[in-house]
Amino acid sequence: MPDVSDRFQTMLAGRYTIDRELGQGGMATVYVARDVKHHRMVALKVMHAGLAASMGPDRFEREVMVAARLQHPHIVTVYDSGETAGRYWYTMPYVAGESLRQRLAREGWLSVAEAVRITREIARALDYAHRRDIVHRDVKPENVLLTEEGQALLTDFGLARALHATPDSTLGRGAGTGAGFFVGTPTYMSPEQGTGEHPVDARADIYALACVTFEMLTGEPPHPGASMEAIFARRLEEPPPSVRERRRDVPEHVDAALRRAMSRHPAERFPTAFSFGQALDAQAADGWTGATPTPPGMPAVPTTPAAAASAFAPATATATATAAMNAESPALLRWNRTLLALAGIVTLGALAVLGAVVLR
Ligand SMILES: Nc1ncnc2c1ncn2[C@@H]1O[C@H](COP(=O)(O)OP(=O)(O)O)[C@@H](O)[C@H]1O
Ligand SMILES: [Mg+2]
Image (cartoon, rainbow, N blue to C red; front, side, top):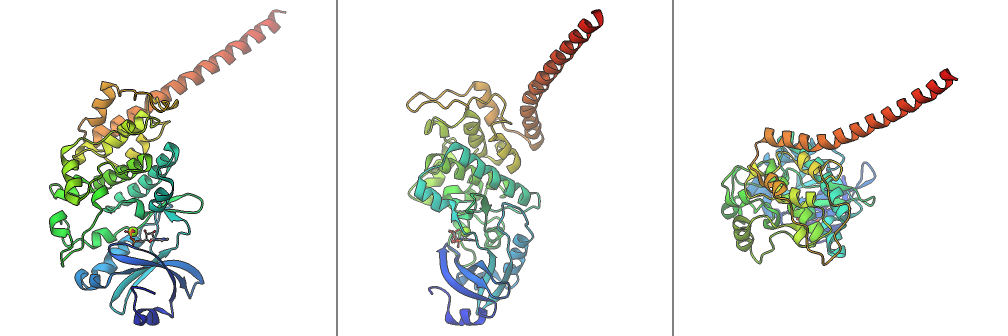
């Protein structure tokens, strides 16, 4: 078994026995292990050897506890954690499916409906965490696990924050230094995570999730680049790309929502992950025109100036929340009017029948 020592395995053997390796990331190796006491399979994440020294004694436990408090249908919770033979580890439910990364590697890209469903599930998970002041900071396809039933689960909560040397550590200072490990993946990282110009908050996760959605729809992240610097230069200088320019069957409201979520400045994005998820929903989106996909090769229907303006208008949390509510109400009003009209016709019919009976 690579990576973990015999000593580690022996010391852990009363509680967990390692079955096989699942995968490796920048900070840890993940194994399938048997929970000896509870007779169940778990995923055991063992942090790389250097982390124990750089994180400090209580920090790992504290951050794992933050993640363990998160109980949500779309979040992989934490079961147990500890330090054994100088290595930090924690266990979580073993998701017997695949990661979104593996699915994209196999299929290239997903249907609009599937990409929107996965995004909305992860948006709900993020919204739940954000309401508890927890920012993920490393939303990427590797951290989205898909169950055998297709449900999307977000994993690796808390660790991203735990591994920051300082709360505002930037690309330059965070990258591979002894004090802190590089956190976040440039491909999905918000501009402010790279530059350090704004404190990182929930809106960084919204940005990253939108980049993941863009990749689910097109097979490519929004700003591909050969190096971290190249990716960030494009991210800071270019406007958010349009997904419809690459794929015509993506509805306009999805395109507009993604561009807004990937705005350069946090204040221009959605105020909450929930409102981003709602904006992707066909029923909630007012004036949805995506029901009939444009055949491949046809020019993309240009977004109306009004829609484009509202998609990019800088918005305060309150203004955007109101706009989101307003976006839903016209559809509801139309539906109410239809119901009223139907009720009127039925009442008139009943009156006519009654009249005929009485007059006879
Ligand atoms: N709970 C889990 N159940 C099943 N597979 C998992 C679980 N957690 C992580 N994995 C797999 O292990 C791999 C390595 O995870 P990780 O160390 O977090 O690195 P990264 O997320 O950067 O790939 C992931 O890509 C994922 O495929
Ligand atoms: Mg991970």
